[in-house]
Length: 149
Image (tube, rainbow, N blue to C red; front, side):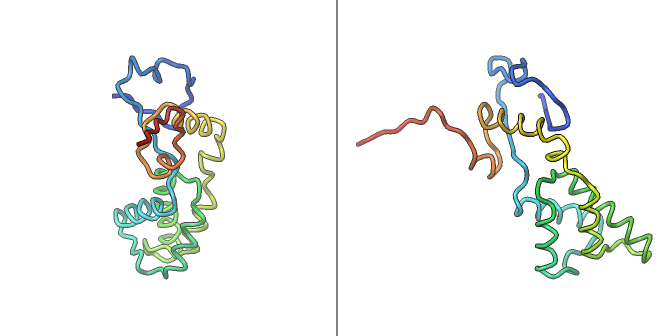
């Protein structure tokens, strides 16, 4: 099994992308708002952060602030905000403003290493089997087959 991520640069022509050597290449794009919502809720549950304390409007505003973040960055937002909440009020329940501030203090890899991420996205669209909704929607299909009856 071979796993790759945006954290590791590679050449699109490397042996790792050769279908004769690798059985299957899977690709998932950056999380959509719905996926980010689920990822953040998972990390909140894991750390006993009660998301019902936030209104839908507040939570959606927070979700909007996390565009281009990957799962590990979303997890770090929750960890950082909890630290701030505990330092300020001796509670692990961050306010929505503390969550938004924690997000603002993290530069997503999709921005800080845009070229590498764009390269991976391009390779994924061209050579890999999409496994997430955004990846499925952006899949290039140069060899489409049509049938007429």
